[in-house]
Image (cartoon, rainbow, N blue to C red; front, side, top):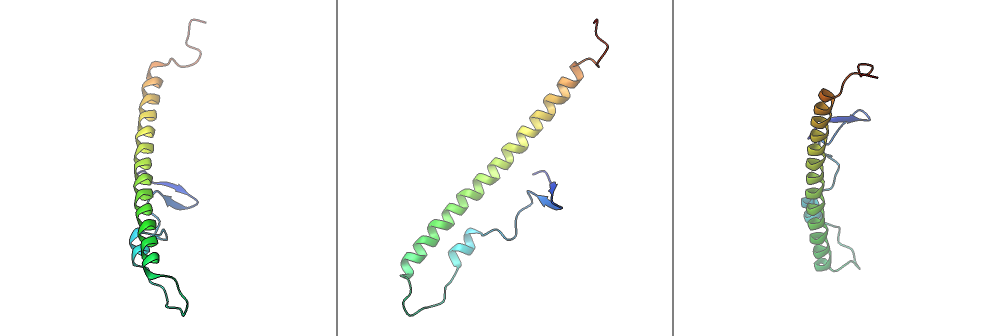
Length: 92
C-alpha cells in the first residue's frame, strides 16, 4: 500500500490502537456480584470478533482496489499526455 502522509502520520500503515479480533475474543472482565451471563458475553465477543475480521478484510481489499485504480489513472494520464499536442501548436 502506498504511504501517503496525512497530518504528519503515515497513512495506510496500520493503526496500533485499533481493536483486533484476538483482543475482543480474549478480553476478560472483573467478576461482580450481579453480573452478566458469561456464555452470552463470550458469544457476543465471538460475534464482534468475526465482524472485525470481515471489516479488516474489506478495508484491505478496498485499499488494494484503490491502489489499482490510482495506477490505472496514472497510466491513462501518461498515455493521454503523450498523445496531446502542447498548447498553441495547432493549426488554429
